[in-house]
Length: 312
Image (tube, rainbow, N blue to C red; front, side):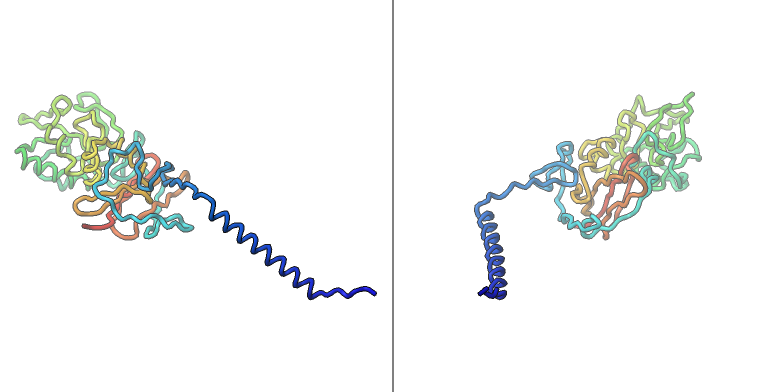
């Protein structure tokens, strides 16, 4: 006589085998965790460099020292890829050539330039047709007035800004890579007899030592008559670190939105970082949601963001 199959016993046995299998896996994993050595973790920052610390600086920028560390929180990156507290500002390809830090041999002539209608009496103009960025006029006024107060001299003359030179009889028959920005001034001396003397043979010592105080730098160091407005914070950093504009722009590539350069300037906590431009179309540049912020193209392939993130 055939025995009847007890289905309940078979089902119970299968459940028991399954439970025992899961228990064995759990115990085995626990033993592995207990005896396995912890793996070494290497942090790779947004600059692509392997570092032992997320705040370690790129070796090419080791002399770019920070005045003060800021509590900039590392990114809690979501689907948008933005650090917490940041939003984006969309920039077109054309904007790469706009801003106080744009520097290239192929920059187009800047738009919305103004004349020197608001210039003060402490310097002169070669002609009234000269055009420039408004912020550079304001800075030049302050520079010339301070120079007069400290030296008693008011003999500077703006020889050229963005227009091309006529090589025949010109004091400065040179092509310079950033003149089209509208932030540049080529200066000379206006003599008492009305003649003009260039600064190539006799540079202005005061100008060389003090122009950074007003946001100007010598963007082409071998041209002692050619000054470029870059803004007070950038001029101060370049002066402190003894960097040319080209060197400064290269050095800033080491700093990203997640690992920015930080400093304190006139009691304001500042961050500065580089954002590479998109290969095609628009670039969404990350910027802090709060505080003042400026974005400048570097003239070639990216943007420099300068933001105030706090006050002392």
